[in-house]
Length: 510
Image (cartoon, rainbow, N blue to C red; front, side):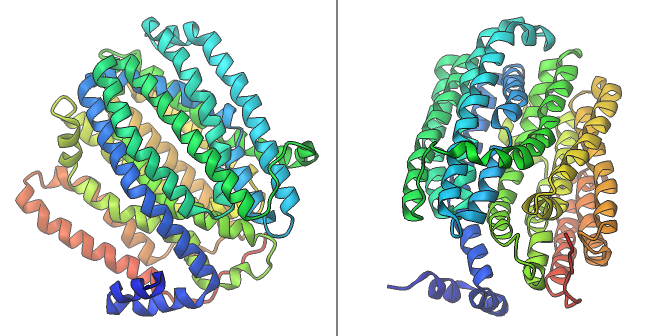
């Protein structure tokens, strides 16, 4: 029977075979390639089905109803940062670090993560249930009290799922995660569509809760299988011995994430209180699906990379591997750029998917800013992985603090414009955050200036920004297509220059 290596070699184009050979000869390369492959295998189908379900639900509910669903999800997300308590990242880092060297400790950390998830998820879910009337008043929607209370179920299950998925990533069980994602994707489409069709907005919210319960069940079974395979005992006994992990890693992780949920909720609330506010929230929710999809595509690379870097975080020779350095810094950004350019050049595709009710300048401008936001996040994600893998997570808190202040400041002034004003506020926050984040990382020696600021990097950024302006500079589709082809060629040149770079290795002192 033909193995995966032989199969991939036979399918690989000749000009890429030297790269494939280098991957096959590198143990780290094989781990990364395997992780990315299985992450993609499950994600492509599951997220495709989820996108189809999202589009159908958006059409069924209309802009206002979909905006209300987006506001419920935003409120749940705000509490979700507290409920999750950074346990997904905590489990990934420490399971990857100890599953081989200290299985008993890895088991204690998994047990502690689950225990804390139950505690924090339960507390936050109760808080959401209790304060639902007050929250509904703040978002100008008193009729959503009951649906916000259903969201408490979603919140609790999400907290448990985060800890489980983090532990699976720490095991580098990406094939197992792919199977889980596939099963969830197959079940999510009929559940969400039937919920919205037969129950309207309430049915859609209950469908989200049911879908998450199935996700938890699949994750739970998968985690038990992986723990047995690695001879790791899953027990709560003595798990409190690992409290130091919670305070040194989970606490700064949750403080970093704590800013994101409330800021998202606050700007959505600003938008909801404008004229036709929930229609604008509906537009913003629709275009934010592109960030979710692109972010998920990036996570297919991010999770395997973070697991590998975390497992080698005590290895002083980690950054002697030039290829790993480049892969860490640029892989997610390059991958997202390949999807972002066509999405920016042809926003009418997303308008067609969501329907004529969403079409218009508000949708297109919001989409452009949201896609550029995602590219900015991915550009600095490699540095973020280094910080988290080595435990320097307080930097991410300071970074998010700056982002939150900028976004809230701009949204206060621009929310009256509509959905694209809020999307532009997010973009301003990410750009200013990057202007602060990258030079500071260079100054402290985390990265080198010629790595993050080079002519290939500037070429790729020029293609992304040019793609965002293209639909307005050349409205006629027949004339836009040749320029799009040219942008793709230039983008390919920039990517190829980064991949072929032969400059000396990056030396990092942490």
